[in-house]
Length: 287
Image (tube, rainbow, N blue to C red):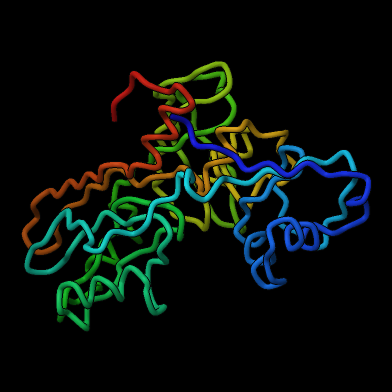
C-alpha cells in the first residue's frame, strides 16, 4: 500500500497566516515543534516543498505532509551492517539519516562503540541522507595510503539515484566545474518511465553534492531532494512521502595499498529506496 499524506485545507480565516502559525494551530504544536516540522523539509504547499516558517498562506492553499505512520523514512538499525573488515579497514553500509563523522551519534561514533575501536576514523564522507558504502580506517591504521588512493582518483565509486525527469540519452557525461574545481560525473540510465528514471553515476571526482548538483544541470532532480531545485514543479503524492534524497552509494572498488589485492564492495539499498522504486513503478534493472 502506498504511503499516505496528511492534508490540511485552508479557509478564508487562514488567509495571511504564516506556515508556522497554521501548523501550530491545526496540529496543536508548540512554536518549536512547528518550526522543527518545517525545518525537516517535508511540508508542501500546493505540491511545492516549503521550508520558510514565515511563508504567507492564502485561503486557497492546500498543505500536505507525510502521515507519521506511513512515512518512507528509515530508522537507523541498532547494529551497523559491516560490508568488509581486514587488518586495516572496515566498510559499512551507511543508513540514511546519520552524519558520517565527528558528531555524537554519528556513523563514526556508533561504529567506534560497536567495534570497540575508539581510534577508528572515517576515510571519506557521505551526505547525511545518502546511504551506502563508506570506508573507515581501523584502530592504529595509517590513513595516508588510503587518502592517497582517493586523491589519485583510484577509488571507483558508483551511485544509484532515482530522478525526476527523463534523460534524452542512455549514457552521457557531465563535466562542468563545481566550486571552481574539476568535476566529472558519468551517467547511465538503467530504467525509465514517462516521468522518472533510475540512473547509475560514476564519479572520478568528489566535489560537495556533486551528483545532485550535476544532475540538476540536466533538469534531473533526485527524488526527495531538499536543498537544490527549489523551483521544481508540483511534486506527485508519492514524491511528497519521500523524506530524503534517493541517492545510494551502491559500489566501490580499489586496490588495497598493503596487499595489492582488488577490493570490491557492494551495499544493498535500504527499504525506503526499494519502496520508492516500487511506488514510482521503476523496475527491470540491475547494477
